[in-house]
Amino acid sequence: MRFAHPDGFTPVPVMPNQGWAYHHAVQSPSRGLEIRYRIDSLPRLAAERVQARQGMAVLASVDLNQIHLANTVATLFNLSGGQDRPLSAFPAEAVRAEFGADWGAIADFVLPEHVFGDEYRIGVLIALHRDDCADAYVLGLLCTPGADFAVLQQNFYALTFG
Picture 1 (cartoon, helix red, strand yellow):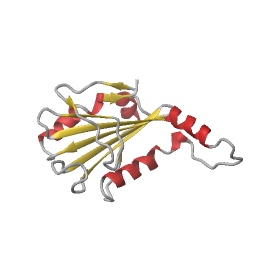
Picture 2 (cartoon, rainbow, N blue to C red):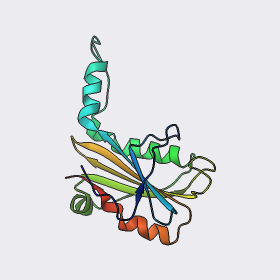
Picture 3 (cartoon, one colour):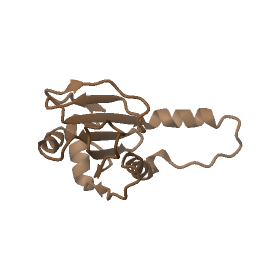
């Protein structure tokens, strides 16, 4: 994967135990937008499965290339505090051209109170999947849906598959 640090953004510490594990975060110059990134390596997960099933005669599991939609829906449900929010899949040709991914989707939601700090009110989740590579998530946290949403849109492509 490729990451291009968004211009003018400042890295911020990763906050553990906020209901969603992530690996990196940046904050906009206005401080009205924070973007958090998570990458789940499919080869790493496959290796962990091999290790976990040692000594087992039978283990039912799902192909790692087939669980991205279920994981994204569960992630959206958890981040939104159980809201029923639509997930909008990107057109296949566009997600391949723009992100180098095999699948991608986006959803927005109102953040539950006190989960991501009192200042953030709106969440935008972008989920990306590339077969045999990774599932990646970009979470935008916004104080208000106005100008900072445009800044988030300008930085959608900070994380792409190479």
